[in-house]
Length: 100
Image 1 (spheres, rainbow, N blue to C red):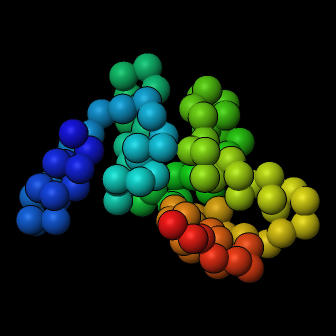
Image 2: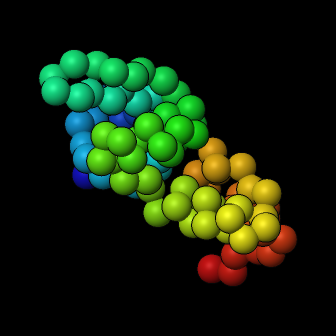
């Protein structure tokens, strides 16, 4: 389904995705709306949404796996932009390359 949504989006159509899966949000969305108790509490580009880990945690929203990994790497001395959402870009930031 996600590949189909991506293809439709590439054709210039807007897709509205409702999900609790933050990995989908990171990989497929440009903007995100966070709702709490039926009300919109934030509407921002995805990169900005995931910058405020403390706020998301207060709403019991899990971080995407890639973002969690970057945060942990940064806690161990790396200085990687947590807005990275592409595995190839993350590999380059770490100083390596991904072999597929």
